[in-house]
Image (tube, rainbow, N blue to C red; front, side):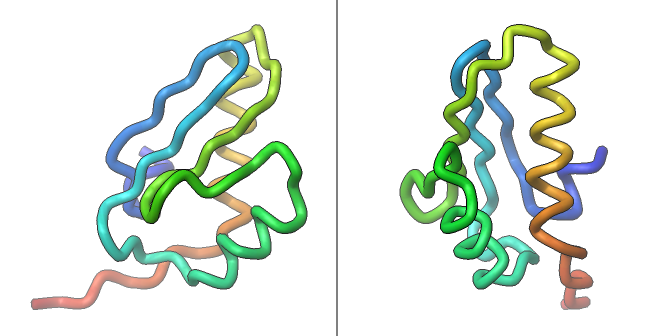
Length: 83
């Protein structure tokens, strides 16, 4: 539920790697993504539409919290433009 406003279409999470996949042109400020990657060595861009988070998190609840924290650090999603 929290991920949808950010344009997230898929989240893969294992004990050592999480990948957040976004739709094309997600409603997130590009500079926020760049700042997030620059400030966190364990977060990388994977192509144009994915964030790769490399961190050992054996507990599912900890993985969920980490993903929530990453999304919140992207700021408030831009409002969807009515077509």
